[in-house]
Image (cartoon, rainbow, N blue to C red; front, side):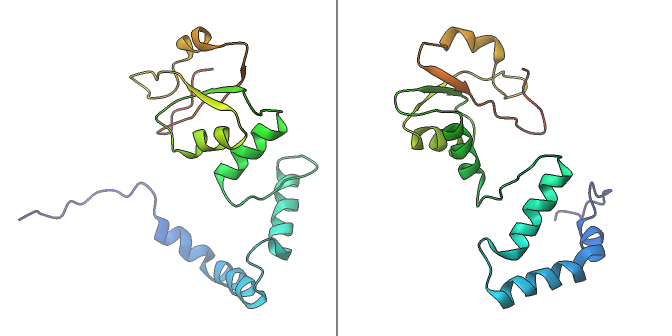
Length: 145
């Protein structure tokens, strides 16, 4: 029989949520009542508040990280026949966003200690077609730039 292990919680999500629960449900109910699931007033308010918070003119809320990566690549001029260096041990959205632009993902090995991109190996795979590098931060460890 496995005995229960007592431990100190890393984060007390229940207490944190209880502090914002009423406000959270009020906002969610408003969105449901107005059927403004995509875009809508609350999204616009969030974009404006977030832009102000990070001190920029505009912020755009997107439906996913995949879309964010895709738009970042497009806005950087990445397209057909370009190469984008990244790691193979990321969620598939990284490579998917690259392929969706018409570019080709080019994989570089990872550092066996951090599991992040091995920055010492990037230079050896850069070619004339390389237009960008997408490092992927994993397990709370930022990549070594």
